[in-house]
Amino acid sequence: MSTIYDELSADQAMELSLVARLMYESRENRRMVLSAMNVSDEADLLDNIRTGAIAEHPAYEHYLAARILSDTQQAARQVMAGLVKEVNR
Image 1: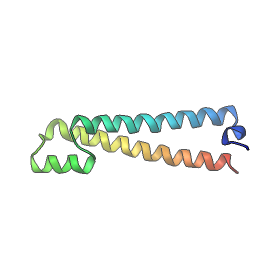
Image 2: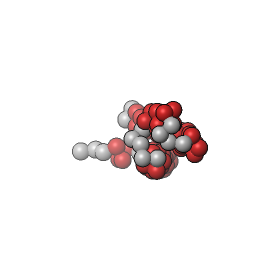
Image 3: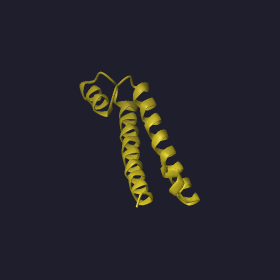
């Protein structure tokens, strides 16, 4: 049975590896940012800022960081999907 790895060139394997690493690091860093603020997601953090449960500074910076990390992870997932689709052609 053939695996996806059988079809990869060295350049494709490196690119997939880098994108996978970016996905992992952005996910884990987002998790750390949210954990530091004791919330489950960005919406929860923003609600806590709005209600005054958490001080605006530095919570808003944490909110922005979590959003950027989430967006980065989603963009990397799209790149990964495109790479996998290209390999499977």
